Image 1: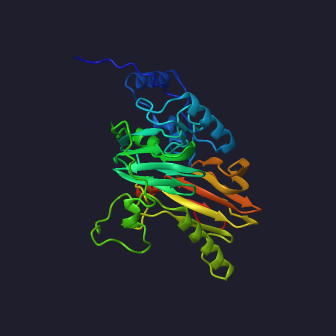
Image 2: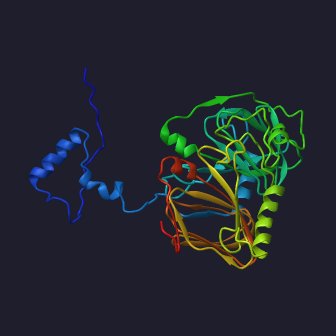
Image 3: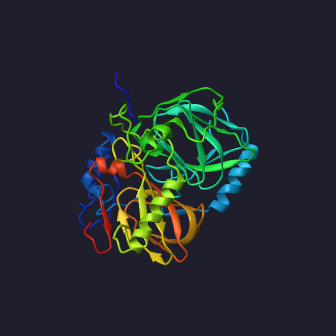
Length: 372
């Protein structure tokens, strides 16, 4: 039995100078192609193989002062529990056709939890993290290990680990979630599984078990020598990030060339078992610009999402530009030049899809005055 397939495939008309003349014979050939679900490369090559990356995602900015009230209103109107799972509101890039994606490969959302609420336990193959720009009082519990969440903390969550959140405080709390949902959705390789409705939070320790084992710089337990693709450390605390950035700028002031550019300190969160990225598909960094600093425009394949942690400044992405302040989030699409400037100083958290591009040998970058 033969199944007939009706397809919307059409050979596109094009006015390109190197295209063959649209004769009746060629039109008939194109109709044959359409019936057989064939598309000639010569009519599509400009779109499929452009001379440089051309992302459908657009540079875009979301204001924290707008996001937080909307999240608080959702906290009043939308229950959290089975079905919706998380009270999370995804950033939808205006160039991606209404999909809940910040970029073609990256998901970013603001999650909001009221006092006493549980975001129930589940697990999924998507790699994830949480970053806290303000507030405290929520514990994320990963495979039974309670991890405190506080301002400036970065909390990675490798795929296929049980996790839920519980707000033990008397105040609501919001944070940003970052995941590789768009990438895994495109590859059609995702799995998801429900866990308990309630989050086990009898403990609220100052330090999680993962921190007690792994959060000692330069020291690794001899019982865990096998490299793991994702970091076993569940919390990278702000006090260490802040100190590392301050020391870079202090060393620069002493005449040592240790910063990315003059006045621009940066660190990368790493997996202590490999020294590589914390998650297989996501790279996370923190950047600090000293007062009166301006960075050179930089382009790279792949995309990024930034959140301003503190301070204010000017951001230019391609033809777009904004003045940004604490909490604001913005997107840098593939190969769009990015430059930053500040008069008073600015701290930024950044996550990217760079590990995917590097493993596929597709990563490329260019900065003014350097070779691509």
